[in-house]
Length: 231
Image 1 (tube, helix red, strand yellow):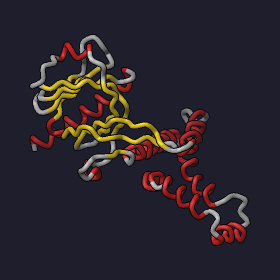
Image 2: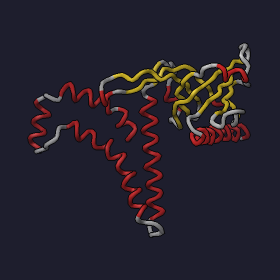
Image 3: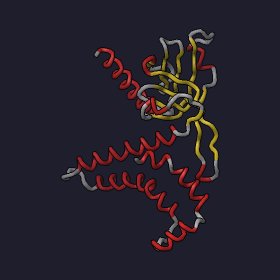
Image 4: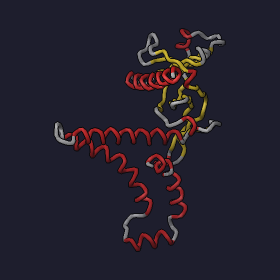
């Protein structure tokens, strides 16, 4: 529900800008004796979404080893998962140029910006030579069924209305993906190889922690695929 609401927030803002002077809205505001316009109330669910986790963290701070602490921790974990899910979905709706049905890929599991080098098996460039080339900046979207590589475009809009867009570049089906967890010379790099190393993507994460988070999720997906094949 929150994902859908937040995804539609830019539309509701645009409609409000278009019809805010409508007599109907002004009359409703007057009858309800509201000091603020409808747009302020439409913003509240988004604001509260971030405040809930702050409240839960504060409650946990004073609830160590008390009855209900585990419930509070569970609520905080659920709230943080929801925040991540909403954030990921907001980035997904900015993808352009993907011709398939993005809904068929499932829920966005992870997304983020990386430096990427690409090597093709039939190409002249060997892996050890890639470091000499300037990497491409790519925004990766990981789904249960696929990995999308996109190019982030300049933000458009004014002020707080600025939003990024992501131009689709590559589609990797997860059933044809493999990973190499460590790349010599850089602890932040790992490899994603495709179709038996026909294509190899050397990915450099911004931090080691980000790299490990992605590897954990990739391992989970690949392990689940292997289990399904054994059934």
